Image (tube, rainbow, N blue to C red; front, side):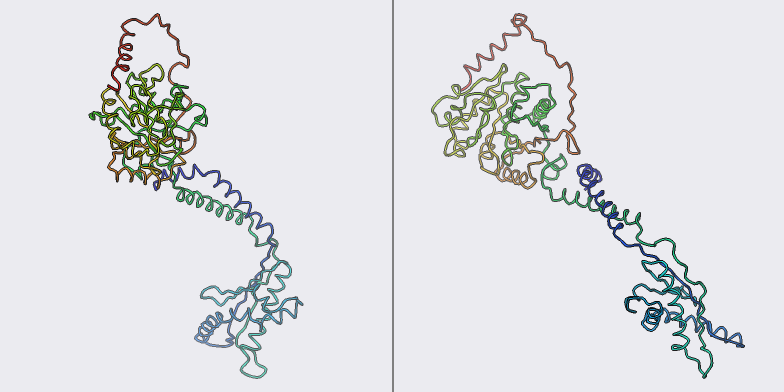
Amino acid sequence: MELRDYIRILHKNWIAILVLLILGLAGGAAYASVQAPKYVASTQLYVSVRTEGAATGDLVQGTTFARQIVTSYVDVISTALVLEPVVEELGIDISAQALSGRVSATTPLNTVLIDITVTDTNPEQAAKIADATAASFANVVQSDLERPTTEGGASPVQITVTDPAAVPTSPSSPNVPLLILLGGLLGLAAGVGFAVLRTVLDTRIHTIHDLETITDRPMLGGVAYDPEAKKRPLIVHADPRSPRAESFRTLRTNLQFLDVDSASRTYVVSSAGPGEGKSTTTANLAIALAETGARVLLIDGDLRLPRVADYMAIEGGVGLTNVLIGQIEVSEALQKWGKTDLFVLPSGPIPPNPSELLGSAAMDRLLKPLEEYFDYILIDAPPLLLVTDAAVVGKKARGVILAAASGKTKKPELSGAIRTLETAGVNLLGVVVTMLPTKGPDSYGYGSYTYGSTHTLEQAPTELTQAQAKPKRQRRTRAKDGVGA
């Protein structure tokens, strides 16, 4: 993924990241509040070898010997030999083994110093344990570990306390700011990890970049999500100045520039699965094409779940099925829609064999004269992954336009639909992304701005000249006499 992809992921999941960050900060503060404060007291010992009246060489040897044994003494301090006298002296109600967990000893490199550190919840007791441990250790070394060589003599090793333990005034732990910071970092890391994992596991189509990873075919257009789409599916007709209506005009423009040298302009519109907006896309695109003055035919080729007749508010009981089985002529089934040269051929009765009808020779005989008369023919076909109808009728058209719903269509489903077309040898012209969000990181740049006045001026019919009205009368005569000939 590129940097912009990570930025989009963070932008898209910023609420979850912020929530987990706050929870991490709160968790760190809560953990710090339940921790008992601990105090640290320390003392320092100096280890030396008695060298009264010794020569310089003996002094050097004594110092070297002290450096060698001091590392061993560090391990002795936390043993029961040293700590049991401390427990008895101070009357502490714990064992020497338990006390060893609170006592630690270290020695700086190449020195004869030993630092004894004691951690306890009571500052006074921490200091007492440190001093008692130092005294007990000195006694153990001089009486047990390094006994005098002669009776009544002194031990060759001398332990001197150079820095007695002081009572600590402030606790060493918990470090509240540090725990809160660590909690925040853990929460932030969890939020970012959740956002990345959610994106990786989300196989739905969201952006143009998602399409580019699946197919090299162009994106013909993007249609914004409209919560009122079910109430007003024909947005180009109902609200022609809305940004969503303008997106269908953009789709119209892109479609007009697709392979301009091709003679056929019969297009099949399908999708990978149901509910992805293919029928509304087909209907609105047909209206947008007819607005340019072109002769457009909209065919409802979904002979399993037809929707075009309902969207266009026309009678759908007679249509494509009746024409294909030879009951009526196509001119009798066509219905003119609106004031433009837009004609609709509804599906008619639902047949038991839709695929066979769409792939029959009768379908070829139907499309041939229609392609000679109409500038554009749009066929609404069933989803590709459910049935083979779209692939069958796509062989008879210039190609298939796939509708993919943002946030709904999954990448494997779209890939499967494309493979179906490739297997059938059908040309995929491009993809239309529907239901694009208007806000957020996945938005397609829609806004509420409209170009021009929001009011239209009604022109009286008497102001139309005969030269303006004559071409339309000629077209209507050709529509009656030419279609189905």
